[in-house]
Image 1: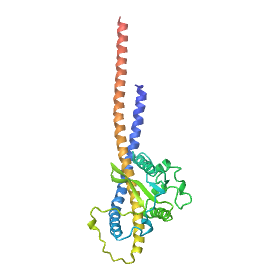
Image 2 (image 1 turned 90 degrees about the horizontal axis):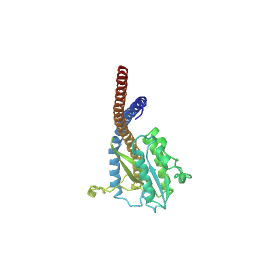
Image 3 (image 1 turned 90 degrees about the vertical axis):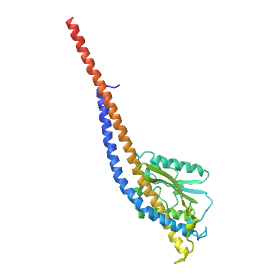
Amino acid sequence: MGSLKEVKDRITSVQSTIQITSAMKMVSAAKLKRAQDAVTQIRPYAEKLTEILVNVSSTLDASDGGFSVEREVKSILIIPIASNRGLCGPFNSNVIKATRALEKDYEGCEITVLAAGKKADDAFKGTEEHIHGTTLPRNMNDLFNDLTFENVSVQAERIMDAFLHKQFDKIVIIYNQFKNAAVQNVQVEQWLPAVAPEAEDKSTFVSDYIFEPSKAQIVEELIPKSLKTQLYKAFLDSYASEHGARMTAMHKATDNATEMVNDLKLVYNKARQAAITNEILEIVGGAEALSD
């Protein structure tokens, strides 16, 4: 047990930490509301677009459209979407772990990591060497400074162009899907080549289409738009998940710090009581000695 001054200084220090974690929790709560609204708004659109893609794809040959061509996977591009800041629990580490697991699955292939978020970028520095000679950026950290569909679309087009030019045979995105403030699920999704998800009830397919303009033109417009929306939704999911994870982490940190302060106050009061008792005993002992 330290001196009374040391315990008192520790209490003051932990109380300062409580103020910081409480403030961070409130900031993340405010940002979470906006991010959650953005995800909620885009999900119906993205789901409907996917539904249309499923129906149209049921009438297409697998070879229609350059974005749907399956090739032998010799080179793969992995896009882990993390955050630029920490203090958000296992949010970043879960994405990094999933990325490393995917790297093991494709051991022997040429693997390139195009990170989004400084935490992922720091974890995979040196794995982006194959980006040189392409039109791709070294990372996509700046997207979080102004997360809009237009900005994400610019990067999506560059990545799609790299796939069309056969610089990569497969592109996978890894991100946290937002459920609520306490739950974020890591998703590993194949982005390219574009594969329409299988519907649970295949009887819902509507294959009797009259194409205007031509089927090729519709596919040329629909698939790129769907890919851009899919990537943008992944960024929005990740952004909302980040603030949800940070809010939860700061809430737990505040509770733990409050519990620590209470324990330290108990230690302080016991030590102070013991010191007072010793002083009384010394006074009584001295008085008895004088009386003798």
